[in-house]
Length: 485
Ligand code: AMP
Ligand code: MG
Image 1 (cartoon, protein in one colour):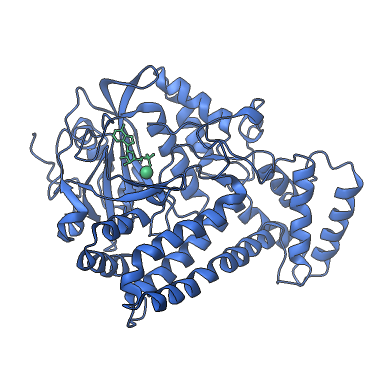
Image 2 (tube, protein in one colour):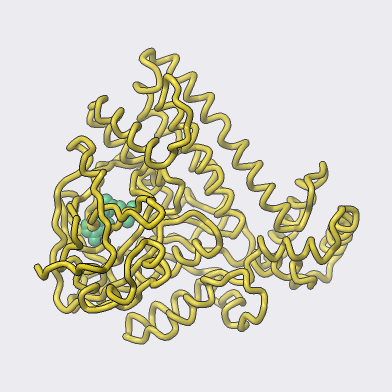
């Protein structure tokens, strides 16, 4: 392997490798032919303390494709299990490798992971590889989510290879470099529980608390403290997804990160017209992961998390169950509270008044009944306009109530609208634009991708969004996503 770059800014540690052996497997990325950087995130590199000029180069491509290791890397594949569509399975990184943890200039720790870097012990029948389209999709949507202010893993680079991957057809191969607060999942704890190794599970509790919840007060049950802290972050995350119409699409327990970041952008998509039953994923036949099911599914996943923690919560099983149930009971309530708090901001309502929930609910009901576009309806109100299709009594009477409510609050109208514009994006990654950009990129033209990326990473710019980026696509009722591998 070529010698590492001296001044690229790497400052890698490998704390995960110090966890008990059951959690990781040393694993080398498998080199590819002719790696080349297709997209590089300069701003993210800088914030990590990495030198973008040095790394957006053939030398950087070698690292981000897995042909060379950055200094200090001890590459490994993580072991985890998970409930996929309700069924327990042993999984693990089948096509990902953790290079190490970059310590940024503020001392924060970030996983640097290659996705699509070749087979590992956990690959089962998979090839360990990834196709360019899905990796660019993750880059685009994760960066859009970050710009929307929603906790998410980030994308540092997509590197193309001269190798094809066989899916339904032959597709150009690529490797994504993913940055995450960590890749510890609910499924990591399910793995520990299934192994029956209580000491290992306990070490993982200590590690996760220290890494993600360092301010948690010390109690006699760290596992219970962890359950409470993780549930609170998930309540916030799910509320934030729903406030922008985001549908994750594959909320298996292995895709729920304990850091509270959105992770795994396979079949996710944003809804256009507001319909709580919206599902995009081609494999989600029963709508398990539909827009409106995201809170109960997150609760279900947290229940699996609690089960994995039970022996650590309390030595007596029935006491442990009672404590876990108390913790879990708070989840739906806190998701509701945060969701309505967000809706109030989206409607410019300050402070909280008794009729506000009903006012927000009635707006959602109107959008549902009239198939109004979720993003554009809120954006129109924020800009002092009427949404489309408002020539009806239901909307008119709602609008009157809303205006009276705004007039009665202490801040002037223009301030309320300014608040709304901070909470209502002018643009989201529209499904047809995403597809068009990925199709062009797969055929070798990255220009539409870069244009779309620039638009969706500046979502609160209510200035001039070209119509083609803000309008829902024509095919939008039949839009389907695939677990892009
Ligand atoms: P995901 O659907 O991306 O959350 O992945 C679920 C599991 O399948 C994880 O254990 C992945 O590592 C594994 N997996 C997905 N695609 C591949 C692939 N092409 N080769 C090997 N393992 C894969
Ligand atoms: Mg996954």
